[in-house]
Amino acid sequence: MHELSIADAIAGVVTEQATLYQATCVKSVHVRIGEANAVDTDALLFCFEVVASAQPMLSGAQLAIDIVPHRARCRHCGKEFHVVQCIMQCPACESWEADVLSGTEFMIQDMEIDCSDTQEGGDGEHAQCADRTEHSGSQ
Ligand SMILES: [Zn+2]
Image 1 (spheres, rainbow, N blue to C red):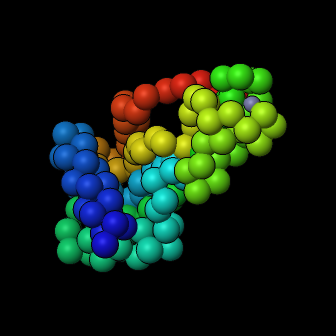
Image 2 (image 1 turned 120 degrees about the vertical axis):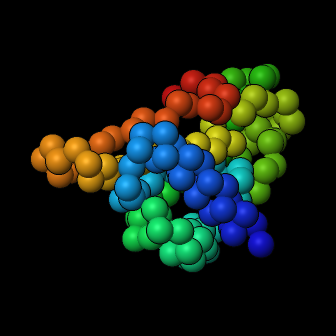
């Protein structure tokens, strides 16, 4: 099951980061997933809940998922188009040579953690994760 391994991977990275920041628990996780990864968001939410509930640090963490549209630009006519089902054919000139603009990324955008030792406002720390995907400057 595709989504379960993704949920597992997210949980692993988040736990690692939260430990690094000496968090006691993770409140929320925000991920950006390219459409090309063909992730079922409902299934991923469900899987994450299952995975998270088994880990004290993650139990109750909310997962927010942004799906990034799969877009490409034609090398021949320069038209930008939406890639449907990974078919990279330009709808304008029917060329198959196109560069992907977005939709293949997979990253943890940010996460909200709680460090109960430091009682400042009680709103938790905000940890920004490094953008680890290849960026191709969409729009
Ligand atoms: Zn074209």
